Image (cartoon, rainbow over the protein chains, first blue to last red):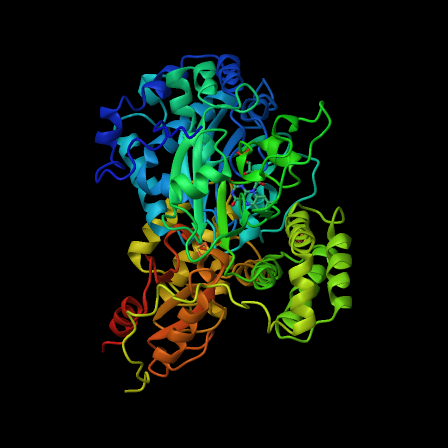
Length: 466
Length: 159
Ligand SMILES: Cc1cc2nc3c(=O)[nH]c(=O)nc-3n(C[C@H](O)[C@H](O)[C@H](O)COP(=O)(O)O)c2cc1C
Ligand code: SF4
Ligand code: FES
């Protein structure tokens, strides 16, 4: 059942929602103050009870991640908290809304997070393009510092905390946590082999926790309500707790970011929040950023076995399954960032895949041959197919190339390319074959809707030289 | 002449170094600072950055060429990036890019003859809910129409 909440978005849309005054009026920084007198163990347990699943894409339990940090902090091995606000996953625009509209939640979350993992310094890694977001975060940091909430003695307590914003420089791969750490250290943003994991050797070789920006911004609210109460907001409690940000874009009438209890369905996201599909009927939806395999509107849940975690939804539309880390894994896709991209039946799936594979080719860091060459092959084969020169053999080759990337790379970018590629090919086999057979002449062969929102407002063109 | 920061930026530089446990970590912010002043990262700028951060020029070149927002060639005064990734493409990004090319009289990747504008495409800029969109210098422009784009582009070319 659709359950909108405003734990995270209370200050969204309010003109002064990003200011310290507004944040304090809502009881802001009380949890940071309280947390600095709590033990690390108590904070980690609170986070575990909240069942917050990481919101950057992989969905790892946040409290468990915090517990990986060494209990004793050796003076020569300081701990670091690093916040991932690289937000580059196509279709995803939630962290940006949080930074721009409510930066203080992130700053307060960082103070609590630092305490929980034994760190005194937090870096917020923001992609360079988000200038307003960076400015809002820096202002929030300076405001908090001026009030004595940060620095050598936050709230008068002997637990120094400093927070810095670190700007990226244009590279999707820097969202991958080890690439991000290299980038933070002043290097090329190339992912590192794991192990060692960041909790052992992260930023500057020191124990580090990397949390997504929405994950950390959720922490103050979680502390205010109490971990367990926060978890219970979710329809999937106790597996996944709380409320979170959902996004919807593409072919919907009212795209945007909406906060709901965890366990929203895609049907609710698309129709109740997204205002329904524009320009036709629903063809398919990419549930949580472009790396999560696409779901077709006509798909039904196939889970006849009683022990299957999705058995309760057997025979129902995939659009009616609550969006969760495990439920969506059961559907053969991923929850990802909870920002869905909607395709109406006026859009061509071959072109959609082409668009995304061009993205992955552009963004591969190039370290691993299967990823660097494979993403190039995928794009070139699709160039050929889209131009009307493809063969059925090329479709098989796409499969082969995607399969040869899987499991053969340093980082999950490889799977993030191959899985959605295989998803498109499997779900739209008929459309791909028809496209190849007719050279694209039988399909709509476009992505944008015919009555483009751009047209109508267009004045006569005139050459730039005039 | 060797590259030098303005006094105001010199102060920022000191503040940047204070954020990190070592100097190398200042690499990205230092390159941003230099590019902001010089417009692009010339050989002199990179040599300066290497000395300032205490790394080799090879390291600086490696970093400068890895990230798409560092420019190792001179470019226009203003930068227009049109997002071309899926959510924007579903909302007409391709036509928007064509429109910009015609309006500016250049192709993506080029700079207008007056040196005012460089046109680029961008990958998803985290603004998918307000597609189609473009970034001009530091600002986002969302829910674009041809009309809005014309006003924005023409403004960049006013002498
Ligand atoms: C190719 C790639 C890109 C990623 N991009 C992002 C990103 O933009 N933002 C993010 O928070 N996590 C991103 N991640 C996931 C991070 O590696 C990491 O799992 C996450 O930041 C951990 O935070 P969380 O546990 O709070 O989700 C990406 C992962 C991969 C493999
Ligand atoms: S999988 Fe791709 S992005 Fe990841 S390290 Fe290898 S080449 Fe780079
Ligand atoms: S696809 Fe254009 S901003 Fe995301």
